[in-house]
Image 1 (spheres, rainbow, N blue to C red):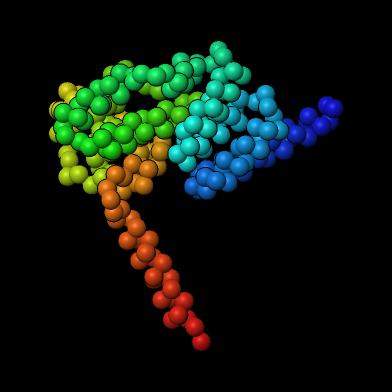
Image 2 (cartoon, rainbow, N blue to C red):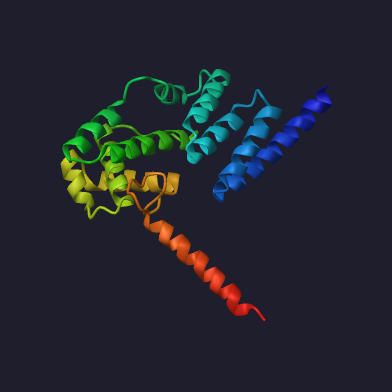
Length: 221
């Protein structure tokens, strides 16, 4: 029995390494598969559940991500992350979401854009994993989330304009925006947070596919 447990844990560690590599290269389906396999082999290891939740959040499957977090919290009830994750299961909005919704509504932003900002906030808090969440001033995060969604959706917005609108420093908005972009690998017109009817990235993909076809024909004997 002990030998089997050792073998399973070794295999689980291998799956975790494969999952982390897949996660970093945006092969999210493979990452989820690997982390799930690691979790199945080592059911008492909370780290694999946390990795699984991060991958599921990146894929947009927040229901499964929250279930993975609930299992993580059962294994680590005294974890310093417990309070942060517990908030994700509440029915109401936190201070950042309340302020974000009020200010974006006042700025005549669409419900889809407000939803994208809230999704961004949810994914960020999960994707942080064991890293601490610095939440001294909710208005700073609300401003950074608003600014990030506007940039993704190609608004001609300046950082100082958003900082003044939320009554926070431009430097703080810059730092929190950079945190969001780096943690979630956010890019212009990111499909996760872009709300327009036609995403310019589609044209880039079509152009790349057409170029590949033309190069293939060019090389034909």
